[in-house]
Image (cartoon, rainbow, N blue to C red; front, top):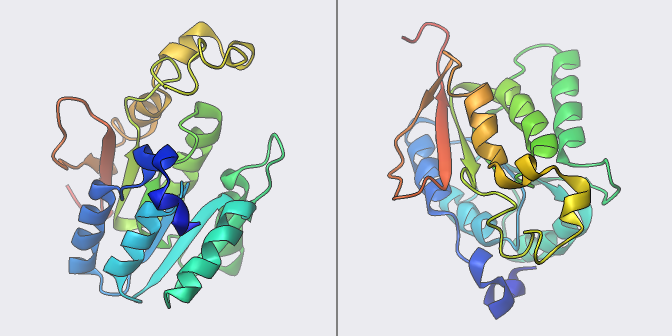
Length: 224
């Protein structure tokens, strides 16, 4: 998998997410053995960088297609990163990382004890509401008080995508309404589930002229 980082075709996803790395460093200041997750791995740029920052500490859970994780695992094993846990899903139409997240949440509830697991969650999935809205809600349940969630492509839409806009991919018109094509789905998710939730506080992560990402901290129950 990691050999794809040098492929010019992947230049737009070959650099690690700087906000994810920055927030992981912040988490490590409070929790030296964090449990973190990444939903959607691309070609592994952020994964490999996060592994180096973790330096074998804690656990790193990855959620994506099984085929991608199967390609990535030998690379990470070869680099000595053994603290990675893989949660794969098939490419069937209605299967996704949501099922693995749901089963994880169910298992933790059935086991009793503490349900929240993650100190940091990075959601960089399909950027489509029907996938990422359930994922966001599941991650809210799995995030520890004081934990941080980062959502990528806050202002992305199918309309502005160079590869998925209707002029390039006409079949997108069969799957989505014009409103769904124009509207940024992650922005809608943030507005519905985070911006107005008093248990979450938006973090200033140094946005530029456009808000490509949003980050939130889950407040402790007694926090103001």
